[in-house]
Image 1 (cartoon, rainbow, N blue to C red):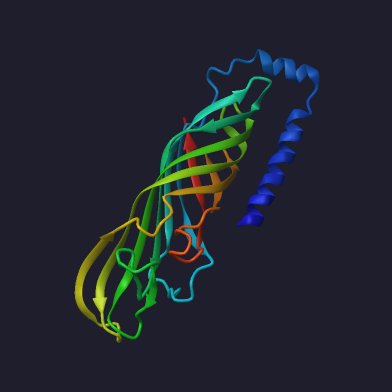
Image 2: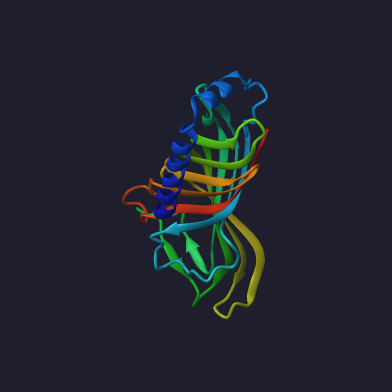
Length: 244
């Protein structure tokens, strides 16, 4: 993920240099064009695959389902007056991660000094466990648009996201025995933010055409507090739908 972010950053810088390397006549023409109807990509909806770096060995990776991330942002976009291809954007949003494991007990409400991940494959266990975290986030993006007036063509963006956790919970479904036979088909939920870092900082990149783009993000800060959990860093890769 770090290599992807570095590569996207290099591509963005090269594109920006090429965009700035225009004849003086073209620059004067751009200044005369009104930005009133410029495509601003105010809304961004993201859906992607979620993973953890430095995942503990005690977590069963034979998952029942795909871990996912869902994000929604409302962005304010401010173009550069001297170059409308470039802009800065920021705004509020909601980001949620849904990490799925199999036959693993996640003790987010236990009174232990740190959170634990216990593989329960050889005893009674839940068929599927989901750890969901929800953040109020504020992304800041440096954007490049090949055709800023129509919103079509190549688009690149790089930036950071600052988030504040508002919820963390587990959802455990279908209790089974060691032979994976159902004992009780019910759902158990637990809520606690005790072991989690309440703030997070993530890097992000986007690249695409028009209103559809690919995105990648990597959390620089650990998911759990120092000494209270493993040093896992969530990352996600997916698609972004933007418009207005």
